[in-house]
Image (tube, rainbow, N blue to C red):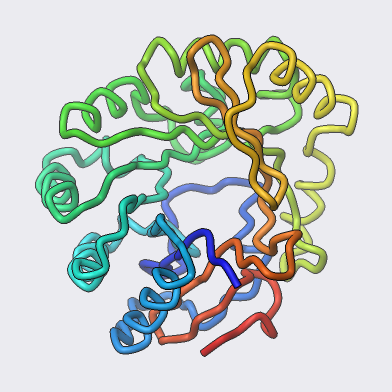
Length: 291
């Protein structure tokens, strides 16, 4: 059995964004609630040991909500991981608080960088601020200055990955992909990942499930985008879960999906650690549990 990534769930189910396709709200809470939980460091150690022994090189600190709402917990996780020497430690965030409250989070970002964090993954829906506002923060008058945030993270030393969820009417065709790649390249974004919004086989939230069905890209739209990237880019890497990495005019572009389970029964795409000590390998199926 090989393991690709150790995902660590930080924070609670609370989030400062209101993405209408939120996958977290469609999948079981798995013990995550509105209050910050005490971390079971014993089982975290076991999960990290298993991931390391089975070839994982990457840790992703993520959440069922927005993880940076609880920055001290992120620091605790980094301290606990210190002895395992994972080459890549990434933080998945919508980035909003990092920009809106720079004074508060700058010291945390420098601390996390010193403790081994390598990459900040910023979830977006578009390269334009207004369209990001419409999807991520429709309750606010404006979205953050994404370019300024990218520059700030680069100045600290982080690599930046933009993780764009493709939505009908937003990034949904080759022309929009071209513009997104141009934006990423101009702002020296190290990695760009694009994926269609997706739903689990069974959802616990019908409203979000229905919105996702109605606003996901069609087969024809996905084929157009895939063919464009394949024709324009040079294939660099292929993952057994279906993702592929290309060089498109010097920009790293990953065509990927939201699947947790690997197509290879001998491979675990993500080992997922929850603060209560449960160790799982899928977000959707409660039976996908090791501890």
